Amino acid sequence: MQFEGAYLEDGKGWSIWDTFTNFPGQCPSGVMVHENATDTIRLRKGNVACDFYHLYPQDLRLAKRLHAKNFRFSVAWTRIFPKGDGPVNQAGLDYYSKMVDTILELGMVPAVTLYHWDLPEELQRRFGGWNSREIVPIFANYSATVFNALGDRVIYWTTINEPKTFCWEGYGTGMHAPGIRDPMQVANCSMNVLYAHAAAVKQFRKIVPGGKISMNLNAEWSVPFDSNSEQDQEAAQRKQDFEVGVYADPVYFGQFPDSVRARVPYLPEIPDDLARDLAGSFDYFALNQYTSSYAKYSDGSDSALGRCDYDVTHTGKDGLILGEQGDSGWLYSLPWGFRKVLNYVNDRYKPAEISITENGFNVKGESFMTLDEITHDTQRVKYFQEYIRNAVEAAVYDNVPISNYHAWALMDNFEWTDGYSKHFGVCYTNFTTQERILKASARYLANTFAPAK
Ligand code: PNW
Image (cartoon, rainbow, N blue to C red; front, side, top):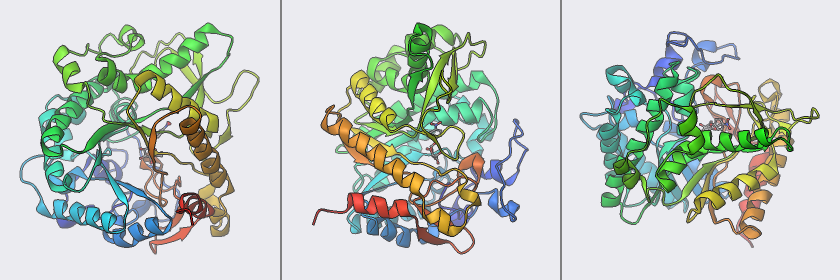
């Protein structure tokens, strides 16, 4: 969705993000994608985006030129099953098969994500998408179809990207597609994500015996607002429980965290059969890490899965701001927070390996800058420099088993509800000409990951 465009080509079906962007304000929440340019109709939508669908051979060469060793992409469910299930669209499978071949020919390692939020619209209409258990066998069937098509060449897989983000924003706040505001549906979504992951992994073991699979979880580091306050310390842990623990604890420990069970009465327990299926279903831990925040105790009348009994703030007790601010309201650069999160995940879950599947930054005010200013992205260079150093320190001094690092993102792309107003690329994308122009951060990563001479 964020890169491909070609939203109706070669048999692709309609996704909930196609609806959200092409019918602005018509979802239940009434939320509209941000428009920041003159050509607002085109820019609100992901219909064209980076046109990666057509331009991927040159974009993959670009990644290779920047010394990328790994290339992560997601499969659009609607290209494989235009209506979510039913007849398979061979053109979609062929497309991703060629993509994998191209990545391998260039000597890079592909990592495939099956679900990065673009649910087939038909499944949302038929039974409410992730709100219904009906999604589980349908997701497993879609996954099996892709495993069969690419499993002979792809080792690294993830089923679902950032369930916390899309369950909460899609079904809780309505800020993302399908634009629903119902805390109950956040709980259903989270539960169904776990069932769907477990069902997909069962297929995976049969079809791709040598492969490795996981789920991409996003984790912030959480600093107690007042380090002397026990309540704030507990709030910081609670934030990890609600954001990471909801998905990782059932996999590693067979149950939701206690703090979550105590506070979300309408969240069911993990039944034994699900716990059994989830056990061992993360061959590695796929971590998306961007930011950190202060956690502060609040008596939380807002008792939903997305946020509970804690407040998040970016300004600390003495007015101290936690790291340098990015362009997105939630994004603050706290390099040592990265090392903390890596250690937190390693200590709590003891994964065999951690693959960093996303890490990146947007520069404050970038969409209002001249091209010259954009390409001199000192703040982003500094972010990568310090974050990568902290990952290396985690690996070397703390013995955290980090196996891969994927920067987010190769180029500016469609940033969900922020449309084209927020830029995470290390290459600038000209959305009119589809030209990619290297920013300093692209050269920085290229130098950092260049093979030793
Ligand atoms: C991720 N947070 O979302 C998504 O996986 C990407 O699709 C997206 O483009 C990228 O990060 C940048 O936003 C996140 O609050 C959303 O920490 C929120 C957070 C982290 C990642």
